Image (cartoon, rainbow, N blue to C red; front, side):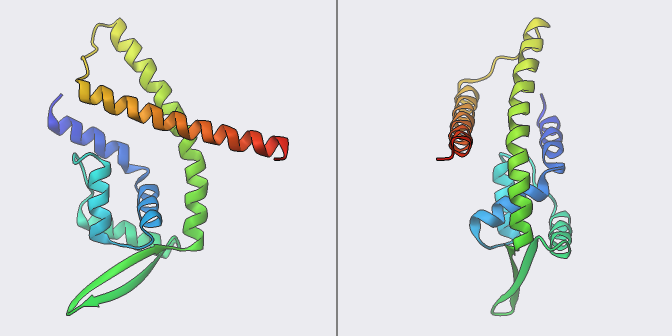
Length: 161
């Protein structure tokens, strides 16, 4: 698969949840300016995609208007920077979307496994290189750990502990 096709696929994966990813980045950092967010998005998309500066700042401004982010201006000499932090509404939005994201992640892994089997049946499966397999294994282990923790939390709530 060519790099251009991979870029388009990665871009498509991030088009819808970009707002959520930005909220996670800002929430985890506590405060971040646009360039920091852009670099984190690029890392998140394994270097294959990042939004344009204009698209990112348009989305950040929209998120400020929606009350999800709070802007704060700072100056370094004559250079103006806007740092963003999450509002209470932003944290609530993130909490709700995080709960939904866990369900979506589970569904995505199931689809991935079903597609892998289908490609094997059709003899279209490409062998994955060892590094990709290692990365996928680590992802599955992290998902398992998250789900195990969630199960313990829910079981404790149900038993009243």
